[in-house]
View: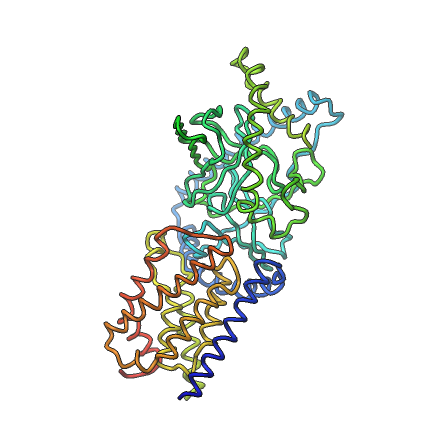
Length: 344
Length: 157
């Protein structure tokens, strides 16, 4: 009995040491990417199996759907398609015009090179963290810290990649931070996840910042993951307290994060002016590796100074252009989108 | 007999893992007990030689792959709890179900404390009180869960 107790203690020490070593390697040195890759591959069948009852249910429902419902949906989709084509035509015209205005010889190709639809595998990763699993992985060319969108806006970025699956950290996760720009004013700041599927917090805005309810937040292109100009969220509440130096601002993500069943993975054209900047000073973002993911951690000490500094840099310039011409919404946008280029 | 017991152990641990990752609405998910931890606890109390600390470690590693921010986090927490329970398995086994549930509650709290600390150290802190709810529901579900595990283990008790 005594010997067995001793051996249990010995084995515990062994396994505990092993666990600590594994944790250290995974957290600090990222030596375990290969191991993780294999483990993700091993876990994928289970994840698919768990997903199969809801998937089968959805398939059944679709198969036995009434003909009328399908026809109605078809008509609606055709209308939406027509609208989108009109929009796309207009967009092409605008892009060409924009290219001419900026004095570029030819209009630039769109920043998105190609994209891939991915289905959300419906499994519980961890309800306290905002994460998703999608059914595309390294075999589809997915890489870590890749932008994930839906048709309305930004969803998040990939973190752990398996051969056939990838984990996506949502912009609403408390560990995730997106560099954003207020579309109306060009004011740059950081949107941090608030931990539930419906809100983001903007914790680094001074209380005199020019922001109000209804402002659209778009990606600012800094940070090296998301390209400039993709819609992220709409400001829902602004609290200014005369005593507090910072305003309390909340925003609701535009993407339907809690109801989506399909998302888009996007590859961006490297070298495009609007493509994500690969290396931002202060944050080591040299390669698309996992170091990029904990932006919220490493970026926080560095970046808060940026939004503090940028309002002074960009807001005094704003009233000069925006105040005399309230109907013109293009002038504030032009210096705002021109600004990051000047800085690059 | 041991081989057969091992097969039953794997099946029950696998079912518990599937129950752990089964998608549920958020409010229900908060209440969901850590089924795999309960299974490991059951086997550690009733068949400490079949499973033992290795079972705790590898079950924890499986949890890490599915839901851990860092590999080895659940593995460490679960091997610690398994070690404590394996050491005390004879005393725990002789207790009535209600007292066992209290012990399970303590074990789950230790497990969650370890997770909480590692989450904090590795910079993935989750500070909401909701993370502690499953320790209570796990203890509440222990008497029926132990009966089901006993049936799965082919034991009449």
